[in-house]
Length: 246
Image 1 (cartoon, rainbow, N blue to C red):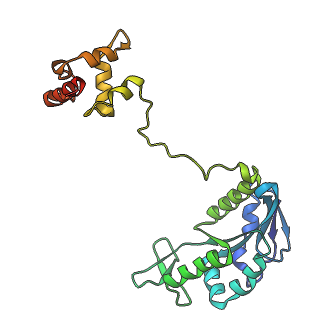
Image 2 (image 1 turned 180 degrees about the vertical axis):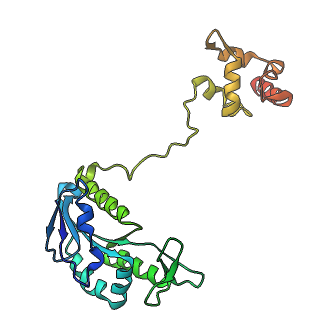
Image 3 (image 1 turned 30 degrees about the horizontal axis):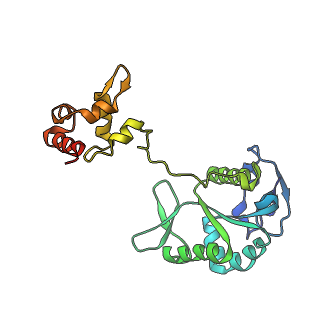
């Protein structure tokens, strides 16, 4: 069950309307009076333990205002510390202009300088400080649809399967070219000048009746090797010399 704080006073109106949008999802939600954060739920943590997850939700303008006044750091995030996992979800679209100032989207094509005289570097440092020194993961989203989707993803990640059963963060790298190579090709690639690509041509050349003959390949002389695409006269002679032990 996700508990959603019902209070929407003038200082927390960044969460305005979130309850109504979450009602249109399949999420189990319930309104409540939360001491900290706008959303909270209990999830599955490490070693089978239950953990509490808290989310403080802000629209970008409210974020900037509360950061500047210190309300976010001194009051709201202090109360968020009661949860095992803490998130700051920021809704809105912002970027920096040529002067390095934070600008907010105010229309389809219009951007306006953010109130409060924010530089992009200052905002970056403030948000990094919240993550690195307060243990609050900052998650930016653009639209309300993004907000609802992210809340659902967060809830599912903590409740669908046990913590230790998650594996999406792991994986072994497998190069796209890692294609199984036959024993013959592995053997033939031991000859100088024959790589993976040419070994395929060699295998096809020495295959008769569906079977490949390593003995015929070893017994072949330069004139025979030269017939294989990609080897050439000089390459064929080097292979002949190698097989002869020269």
